Length: 72
View (tube, helix red, strand yellow):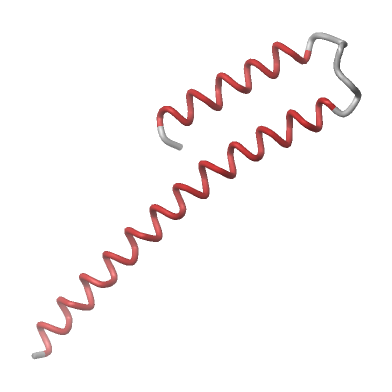
């Protein structure tokens, strides 16, 4: 996670924990909170995976270009 993403996640998590103490919510509120947390985690992990894949492609292309130059 990025640093701002980690702070956002921590804030939302603590906010949900704070809201959890009030019995105003429906019985499915816990599941909604858990789903929201999972969505936030998956969003940031997808972004990181996408960034890593782009870096891997660039590295592979540069290695292939170096190898082609050596074989010439």
